[in-house]
Image (cartoon, rainbow, N blue to C red; front, side):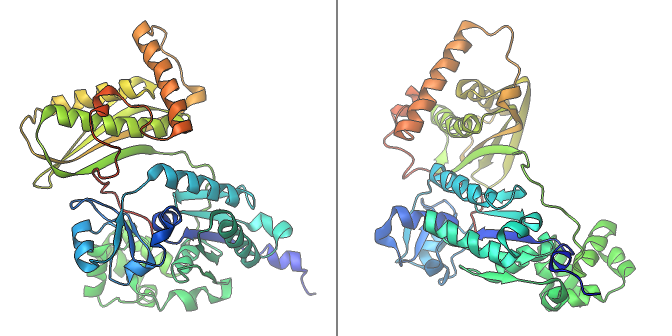
Length: 412
């Protein structure tokens, strides 16, 4: 007896991996239309790093996480602009809302990519390919930027597929074509294969995914260890049992900057700590979250790092409260006179604002700070960053346009 169309459709899951194309650079092109079509790089400051590059810039070999100074040498005629993280977050939020129009099963991986399980949406919106086409159309019509979508029965294959149809493409790998697609790929394409593992696999003569698939599992476990051996073997046969996890809680919020010159002056260091705290805490409150663990990262001129963290009894979200803890962590390091290349503030151990427990013995000073902070947030939302700032930061010239740049990797 022949099966119905609905029976055939329900046999396998349909997973999409949606990846925005050069997201930061694409959004920046909208804000700087005079640079459209020219090589454009998001990242500024001689000692900063590239956060994103449009495809015209990538032709010169420029990639995310590359030092800006090197990128400038590779493409002297490229346009370098500072990042606008608030703007990217806002566009990302609207893009994610589009995804939720098609399925409640959306797992964001970053600002510019997400997995979608549309298995249960096919009756309403059509096949996975039709849903992917609709999403791409909606994103472009609404935000004027493009995305690439991989379509498969697992997260692993969907992500590989999206990477092979960039930019502005769509690639479906049906269940019966998975191994034909997967096995010719280099071993470096498998999740978990970093430089060291890749080197070991090359030493063993394993260069393609098919080579791993045809290697006895026990051999892989002896060479790579129990966990890595099993994981690579399973993925080499496209066995990926992970589900799309919607509404994954945000793990941390952070702000870090590399400075255009090494900082040594204590007051200047405190100003930068306050600037970073202001940026991170604003994002925390905007997401209606609080943090119990405040972290500090210091990178010295020789590129060595120190990190410290403190967990408080009750979750907090005020700039003043968080800054005092970050300052305390810095002073405890006893590194007076050291030359500092980077500072970072991280907010971890997050909880929902609605479920936060207020301190029972909150003094008048803390109440005043909280009321002032709410007023500041409202002003920022209405008039933009820099409209209201702590007095310590007002004395500095301008906003962050020519300031230090984040060293965290950018988007695809």
